[in-house]
Image (cartoon, rainbow over all chains, first blue to last red; front, side):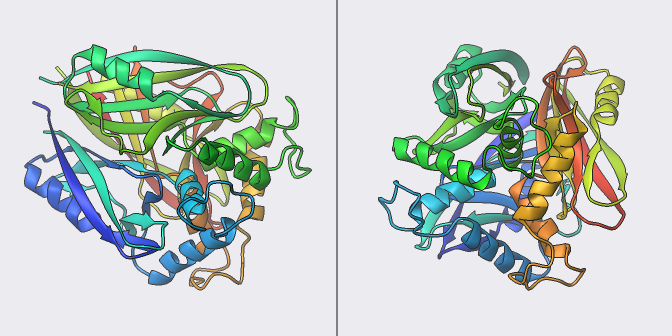
Length: 140
Length: 140
Length: 140
């Protein structure tokens, strides 16, 4: 019979960039005792994202971040919302261009990620933050 | 035992911009009688998006819309698909750059949104539209 | 009582562009015998996307691809990760700007797509690839 479990995952960030979270998410699936099901991740913030990306070459993550810094420049005079600094509104735009929730099937207790896929929290702010991901598992 | 419920939410838009839908979605969760579960929202259109964004300062919403107007300019000569006007193809591109579905856990009958998160329908067309969101709840 | 089913869908691509997958996904829902539920699609790659877009005018798909070719130019000197050629890192960026998973409700055995919506695998690489989508159905 299907059942469901919810857990929080807290990630401390130290400035812009991609932080790997595959291992703690996989560990939650393992501890749940569920063999097959669905893992839904929801990041409870508006200036950071959840991303599935290449997990091998660190250049991919730095290229991604540099592309977004060029696409959505800090301090752009277009922006009126600058209360928290020149990276405030760019962080909201970067979040809109990506995603804050993901849905991942799992089977035999293992997330159905491709060989080269990792799950990342993408921090868009320059100063340290404490980020919370709500993880919902449903399966059997 | 887990059970599921589906409902439509209709949103009338009056031109480009972000329309809040958190309250009607939360009300559906409340009426369902489900305490814990998953809410999946699917917008049945190709020229509007579903977005989770900052719910406090309205400047964030206007900055978002202005950034996207600059990134995907109306009337861009690159586009061949212009049947419905100069905002037709830009609306499709804006939809591709964002999302038409969202997955949100809820617990104790409340959507697991962060303090500053709201759910918005982002209308990308200039003329009024009637937009339909299919909402699927599964939980217990 | 709710139950779940998982299946793979393999799509062979022949270069950049949008490949329709609505029919095989709908066929899996039909074969499942489930009347109402949720279909989650997860693409197990980092250089292709899943997209819901306009299904009528093929110009929309070519305009989308040309917009992204301009936004994320092949061979951009910004990129350090060029191991697999000048379309390698642009494919990762295009994937980050879109999505690799989708959540779609279905009812009466039919995906809750809008009239003009189709599901596409968006190939971002120029050479042929074999792409795998994990499909998870939960419903009754």
